[in-house]
Amino acid sequence: MAKQLKKWQGWALFGGSMIAVFLLGLLVSSLMERRAEVASVFNNKRTEFTDSIIAQNEKFKADYPREYETWSMTEDTTFVSKYNSSQEVDVLEQRPEMVVLWAGYAFSRHYNTPRGHKHALEDMRKILRTGNPGISIGADSIAADMQPATCWTCKGPDVPRMMRELSETKSVFDPANFYAKKWSELGAEEVNPIGCSDCHDARTMDLRPARPAIYEAFANSGKNLRNATHQEMRSLVCAQCHVEYYFIKPDDPNNPGKANYLVFPQHYGLTCEDAEHYYDSIGFYDYIHPLSKTKILKAQHPGWEMSQQGIHAQRGVSCADCHMPYKQDGGVKFSDHQIMSPLAKIDRTCQVCHRQDAEVLRQNVYDRQEKCNEVRDRAEQELARAHFETKFIIDKGATDAELAPIQALLRKSQWRWDYAIASHGATFHAPQEVIRLLSHSVDYAQQARLLIARVAAKHGHMGEIPVPDYSTKAKAQAAIGLDMNMLNQNKRRFLDEIVPKWIMDAKKNGKLIEI
Image (cartoon, rainbow, N blue to C red; front, side, top):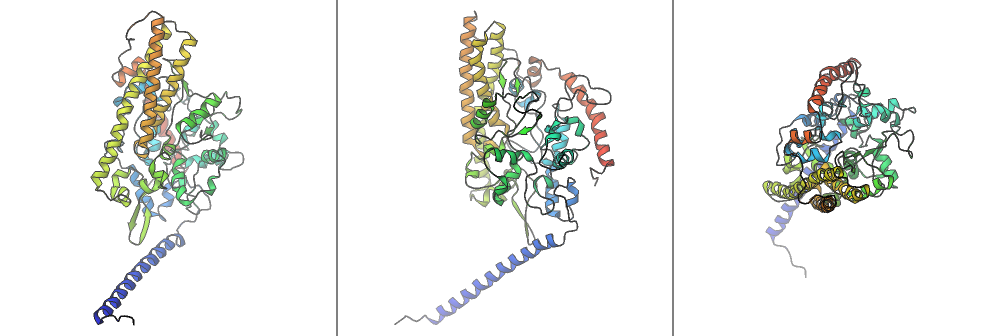
């Protein structure tokens, strides 16, 4: 015979059931309220866009006030961290060896840490790498501008707009005519900073990368980006810009008519070595180092590729999960568009999955960054000396046959160093991969220096090879032959005369909205 419940047990069971039903009702009510609020946003839009690309971010403000408000906060530069704060920092001042490593390339002039998305255009215009060929600027134009329009590609939603307007088919995915322009030709068109239409289809607000290069890269790898899941898209809209790339050279016989066309070297995979294999297979190099005469590969910012080597991406965590954490406003849950370091909002980023104290988590990140930077310091020291030492043996009469293995090692070493440090967040995303690459960089540089010493001895020099003083940014730039007074003078004139005209023309033509 079944045992009967005592009277108090029955009442307890009844009460527990009522509490459970009540709590379930609250949950359902909350979910219905949220769904109603979200539906209200889309059903009561003030502006219905018929175009997928709306370059002026201000046009989204009325319908998406929360997202717009947090996006506007990308202008804020108050966040401070041990590494990668939101302020602009002169990296060459901190690490003068990098001036030597980038000799022969515009990055040796000026290289700052990145700020928030709202600063993207401003920072690009003022950097010494643009609008400044290093010779006198004409009175009415930048006739000697050496930068292609391709350099604008990731700086704002005017880019896909102009790709379409300049294309013969009026298709956003036909960018050849855009790439063929000079950088200065589109200055009055590229005026809206990174924003809504870079990542969303303006008609539906669906996530959608607006840059054709990422679709082409997927196709080159035998994949279709349009088959990606929503969670994958929360990273791929970032991957369209935070990625390694190169420009097809004007004299490339395999790509006639595609000068400065943007390509992601993902044909063989997403690792540093995969990209190197592709570049080697087509005989590509970004510049010839004026000291060592090495054909150098310059990494851009392979943030997405490096992140894919780390544990978070391997566990299905997207870029937006950490850099655009969810935020609650009444019954609406939305993505915080103040895209920045996860360490700024640990309670909504790291602690969603990790239960440790915020300061413990922060220190865990710092520890990994410190270890990576220890190896980075050594790599930069070895490489800088190796370039000067190679110049020394060239001046002593080293033959091409003697130089070839040294230059091959320097190319490998610098590529791994640059790839590891160029993506900014890699010491968090994949610290083990960063240390692996930097360790290999040190190894290749040391092998090169051993060969240099042997060649120097063969040509009559014994002992340590003398190198110039490059202990500060100014000394390093002088050592590689940069005329910084001329570069700064040209840039001041460009900023005073050319940029204000661009902005004025953009406002006059309705391309830029004043608020």
